[in-house]
Image (cartoon, rainbow, N blue to C red; front, side, top):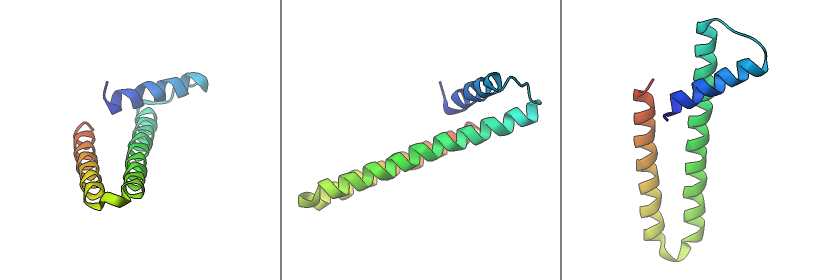
Length: 86
């Protein structure tokens, strides 16, 4: 299941809890807000992991930089893939 599908399911669940059936354009906006929040959470978590690696690999800075660069490349690929799904 991709991010957009998860965002749509979440938007439907929110509408059910609120006992409302908004117009399609409003539901699309809600879905996009949820999708953006999920993406930002993934990116923030990646940054947190990168910082954690840098802090704990002090003795081997080259390894820490390599791992951090791998994480950044994976994040870039994730953003590209998620953007193309929109």
